[in-house]
Length: 142
Image (cartoon, rainbow, N blue to C red; front, side, top):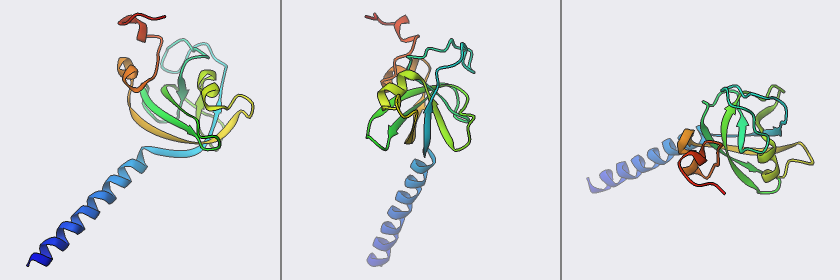
């Protein structure tokens, strides 16, 4: 009986690990990123800030915080989704010029990346290390 209980406990552990792994995989995408500099207004109505840490994604909700890792050079950046795109097949995210600088995309224009969804943004974006134009409302900016 002890053996059966231990076996079921172990099986339950592996089932939980497998379920957790699939949840993590569901929040991660790997593919090609590009950067963009055009536009005056983003899809969520904000003024486009080329040097901001923002990005365009086809399906993630506006305000979602993502971590983008350039798989070629290992650089990472946290960005807030505020626009829709990319509209070129095979690409999974368009990053602002500010994001492209941090990822090392300025010269090549594109790179293979891993995009991991971290959480929802808005004013809580600061807690994910993302600086927004709205961050200065409640704190002193330099």
